[in-house]
Length: 412
Image (cartoon, rainbow, N blue to C red):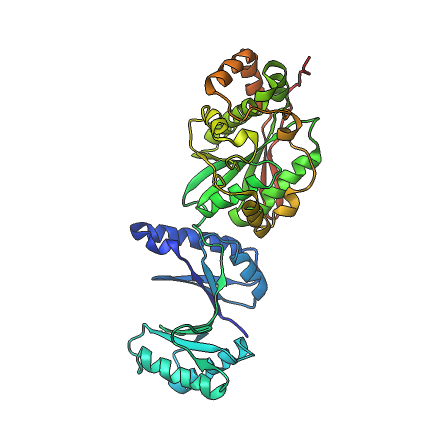
């Protein structure tokens, strides 16, 4: 079967009222970016309630479909056969041929649904439905009509040309990347944070990301794992700027000066401070984390209160009510799970306390941070200076800013 175009269906965009045009145009921009990765030439037509991707040359069907399935905002992809405005006999013949090729088993129930937008066509929608249904039944007696719950819906749109399609390939849904602004993702090497980034991107957010490195306690393999995860997420989001921060000096100093049962909470507070500083410089409006209530000691409600205390901008936690199995299901769906479970350490696991506090008190945490004195401010500034910015997309990576590692003072 040779398809001449793909009808792009969207869902939520249709209810955006006066903003609908802006959402449609941003979706078209994302579709164009996806098509650049495909062989062949394409044009895009935007009609009311319809976006058509038209093939202008030969193309690889599977390649096009797989790339369109990564575009947030697309609810469904319908391969379309396009005809000139032909007479009824030719339309009946072609419709029956398409039905037979797309459903070789033919032992299915079906319904013909016609939209006659070109009012000069000699038959109305109901008459076309009846004629085409009869043509299919005549060609394939084993098929049956079911107008209420058909297994197959054959749609015919009579416009300036005639469009015929009968099956829908599910898209990822959501909103086009960019319509919701930009946010900074705290990206670790675990299962949760890539899923959190993917979920926020599905709501229209463009992503930057920050990774907290702790050399020599973490290895280059751990960093590579994070870059690989960013690349997986970038298949859906487009390029991601990954900020690689040397966090070792701050971690060692906190380890030396603060109670060990509060290490994780205080370290998280400094991660959030750094992430927020980077987010402001990158024109981000929010932070994103992969936290889920009660999953670990630093993710209890009281611990999250202590973490949010240092944040001025919103912190999005799309996984907050998910259990681990639900998160793993999405991780597998987006292709991140096998990378996420690779056994490379990250800075959150290196300095973890044996018995971390689960109900930290904010005033106690604040008072213990006073033990860090003004030296922590100097370390904070040095950590920001170590920022190595790597632009990552599905085709590879490019270093935009090289790092200068901060000196590390060993704890006594």
